[in-house]
Image (tube, rainbow, N blue to C red):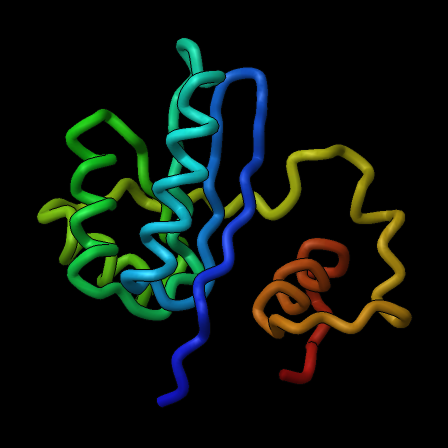
Length: 141
């Protein structure tokens, strides 16, 4: 199985700072992520730290240590797929809350998405968006 290097996105909101992780959380990725976390930490204030592991494909020892450290510091974790939940729960040693089924929190946003023109790199995302717009639609993967 091919390893995908870690990529991550920081979503800086008024009540939380959320890291969305994708790929393999290995030694190199964990070092980069922790360095960026330390920089962002100075602006965190009383906001929550949320780690979204939905698209994490693997975690090595250093990645597990970083996740465990964040857990000790009070971070919340999200994992919306069966595989990511199993991975996260194995590292955390506890069950995660059930994921929300909410696809879009911006009212009316789905009306502006032109599904015929967009090409998604993640078929699951495309399927969920199409189903939210038209619950009877069938999509190809």
